[in-house]
Length: 443
Image 1 (cartoon, rainbow, N blue to C red):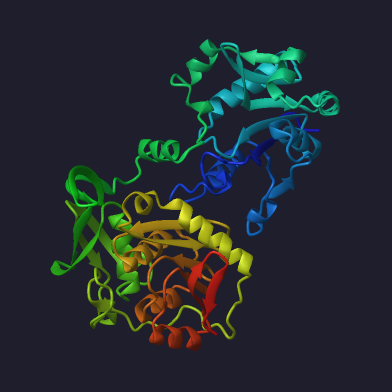
Image 2 (cartoon, one colour):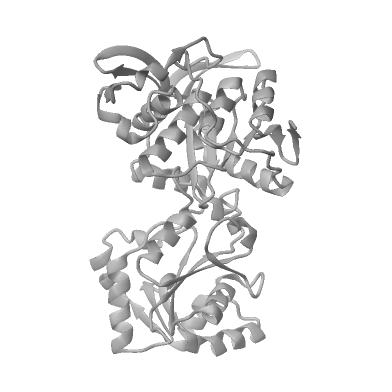
């Protein structure tokens, strides 16, 4: 049996303070649990996700097991992880803890080789930190005896057993600010973490006058930042796109793709930017694909495309109603900007490889352009993906979805008649007015 080959992500808490299941914390490019899984796979050969909702991972190639003792807290999750672990020791973290320290993990392995123990965890003052720690399979009988006694506090068990601990001085030599033990328990903590990691600033405060029952009061309100993004193609000023602050390169690349100007990144010979102005050189001969027409995108460029769909599906897919509800829950939970301002559209792409791509913007077309740009820049495949959006589905939106291979398009809003015709022609599953348990499927 391997010594240190296994790690577990505990994902079974109630998430009461966050307001939604922390297993679906979205960082804009991926779920936090996916980030942790990816980083742990670089260190451990086996990564186990222990979840009270294993159905959330049906489209991921993860090793997922259910909590063996529901309602028994983290002690139950560790017990289940040790039961299925392929190693003598199991490294344990939680789905709401964004930081890992690979150097400290290696140090902990060496300490356990020198002085074996039933567990090696951190200690901060009188408090034991149970996560970012190692647990031995020898601990299983002790955990089961605790269950029999009704003792469910992990810290109490570890203290009674006198397991090995790392003191705060040692921890700070590896993590001066002690971020390792950060839990994202509330939406504010999530916002603070995203801000710290350099995510885009899309909101500004302005002084307004608020009228309440005839009384006018000064009030500092939050509004969405709007920028004019200028695109110059082959030295010729072409257009401006009005968009939210941030992610402009993805927007430009996605726009070029959706407008039929490029097919791949290789069609872009160079791209430079400064002060929201992008100068793009594209391969000669591809610009003829662009045509100009009046579209319904109130913040778009006025350009559209006549490109054919990426895939001609023969029959529409029929999404499971519970899956549609889950997609909507994720969409509702991820946009902090909409929650604070009500001023953006949001779009999520759920891809076949299990990854998720999210963008919000003042323009609904822009959200899809950003998704397409991100996919092109990172090599992600949109074929047979599901697009979930807040905006109205016009003919241009469904055309963009079709030319990028989306199999299903779901919106909280209405489709247009022409969008329904195009969806039927291309055998794309189109769902509108999707809210909670209710939706319309346009077959």
